[in-house]
Length: 538
Image 1: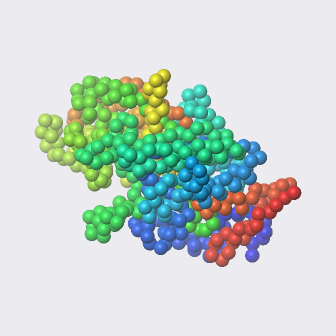
Image 2 (image 1 turned 135 degrees about the vertical axis):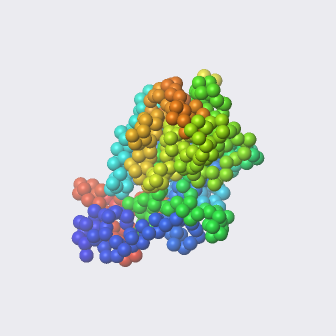
Image 3 (image 1 turned 120 degrees about the horizontal axis):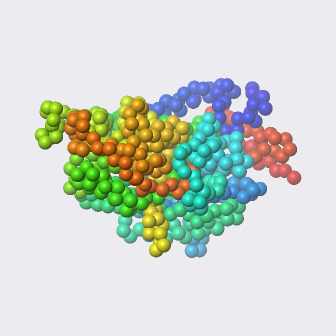
């Protein structure tokens, strides 16, 4: 048997305990195999335990119209009160006079079963784990998570330009989402619960008023589609987990490919504080990005005038898609309002399209987009996902929502509360940002910086095709306009812990006073933690 000292060292089931307990290595291999296969049928019993312990919204968007995000800093010596509240919030709070019931943290299993009520989630920063006395259960082997967004990225953290929640240390984020996609939906219930939660949090933490998101919509060919403030369809081309019954049937009948379904390893990682080997979490990036709509429109019009093209095509050159979602690498004409089909997101830049007769200078034939003759290399969707072989594992799961803080004094306070989930901050979000989005090069190619992701040099030279889809080597026009239409207002890295960790957070005591030793935990043969009774002191 391992010594007591070794048991003390490994508090959570998902710490590296292979060398301590027989059978753990095989169990971890089975878990790895489960996470590595396409996530097709959530009703398969092999997924049940994982999904019941995983927070919602990681694998599927919650499709709620309204969202409130509280940023929390725990007060010193109040970690006991904070953990009590977290445990109660996770389990749920009954209805009270004039205050609706709080259903508790929503699980992925509830979401996949068709959860229609309020969504509740809670995320912690590395400093948040430490403030709760649980730093030893913070996800390990992630320097990005430990160091934080400010030290790891090129976003301009100028305190006077950041919004209030992001000027000081953040320990946790509480997210509430409510309201279905309908004109009748109102944020009334959400506002009532937010007031209650904000009051409760102030008993043991500093908390600013919530960041409020609200979905925006446009109709493309009669379909109500979420859009961001520049007017483009949002949430397109996402990793796909657990497709609908219709999607499963299409795979069975070979109308769709199994490879179109992503594996869970893309977004999930073991939770060190989880109660079993399928206790999973995910790293979360949160960014507040202000969008200057007038500046974007001015930039598109300037490009259109300099190239002699329609402003709609110029917009598509900046974004990589038309507003309905149609990729500019597949189409150069202004769409008739129709919504792009999902099959048109299954593309790369090697697609061969016939040259138009008026564009041919070097003979007729088929032309790919590998030279940027249809979609510029700096276009947002091409910079953030170049769709090259081997880049699939870099994808992130985006869950953003627009915000509107317009006032008479500042009518331009609109933008996006950007959120993304990923297995690794370093290998996914930071790789995308540093190597693609904020990089003037793609390999040895001088591609230009993505003007839409924010935080880069907005005045660098960018190359546009003069004519769409021609092999003429002179088919280029360089433009050095100042495309400053995204402002960084703050951000933070979080981890979405397993539900079992949050439900039992009061049982994970901090170090014993004066002994610098953790309370021991005993593991049963099936790998589940046998939580000891809480030890009282004094």
